[in-house]
Image (cartoon, rainbow, N blue to C red; front, side, top):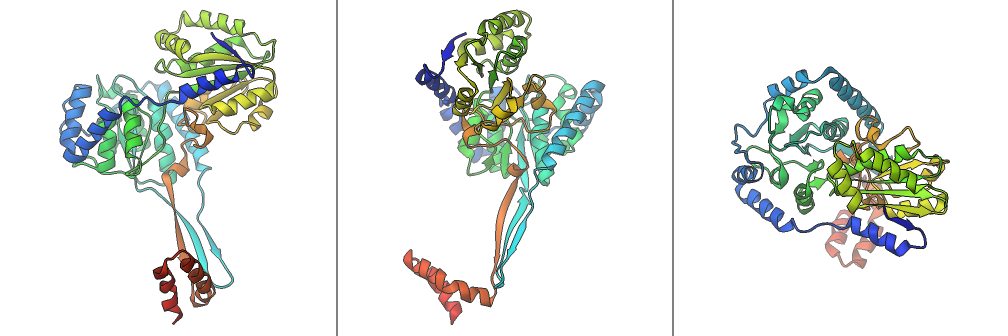
Length: 429
């Protein structure tokens, strides 16, 4: 594995980080056409694209999943898996319940009353990747915060299921969470477009959340403004800060945990100090890769988007971490909490040897929908706030209006907006 020496090789390392953050625009033309067709032709276009990409011909009668099938999927689950889903859901709900903000009203002595009113979005679409894979954690992490926020209408879309639908775990999750009446088996950019514009079978939503492939991500980006979105998610990534006290076997395993997704992830190890043993980590990588079930994906990631960085001290590691702004950050080092406190640009931080990133993916409670590609500099994890909107309510009485009037007129006149000023002056008369 390539080892960068920081800060000596800072320009080269920053170039690697920037390359990882670049977006592939090759799908834009395809997605733009899908969006235009769905906008113009609704269900017909959705069904045509589904047949083209998923090899399934949908109809208005078959596009919606049967709630009874979702219930059967729940009953069919292995008891241990059912217990795990309940455990995870309880943790997610408990954590997100703490995020609920409150409306407030400011009342001034002159009689002005100013309110910030918080309301949930009315209708939200949750995209769940599917087809030949299952991601029940996506259902939990996207639906539960919306429910905590008070969203009344939650629609789940997922590509057509290949095989027995009663074995599709996301259907079981939909039943567990009480949204089985609103599950549609359509995926890809056509699903996002249908949710954005509305069709005869899919009512328009206010926001679409949830991960997907490059076509889904592109559709969300292009449709932002017509609908709200959570983010334009890229490939998963992890940055591990470790010192000589870290267990090399843990480090290798945690690098693999991110590298196994698709083969295009970014995994980076920062080793603190001249005595950090990168070779010991390499030996563990070689030992563990031999029995890794998803070896092909892991080897692809390690060969394309993985590297090591040697830094002289913890302060320099902090500098590099803030420059990368990683989705996931593990700290396997002494004084891990003190290091974490100085890192501002990050999606989620995992402290110590007993907090591997997968516990955050599944059961801890904080959301695993995190900013990628350096966007942790300005984006936050998905949460209850993502499903709320704020409105301002203003109320003046005659006395408070009289106080504000001359100042309002002066500012409106300065901007040349004389009708603004007149709307105040007419009330002075």
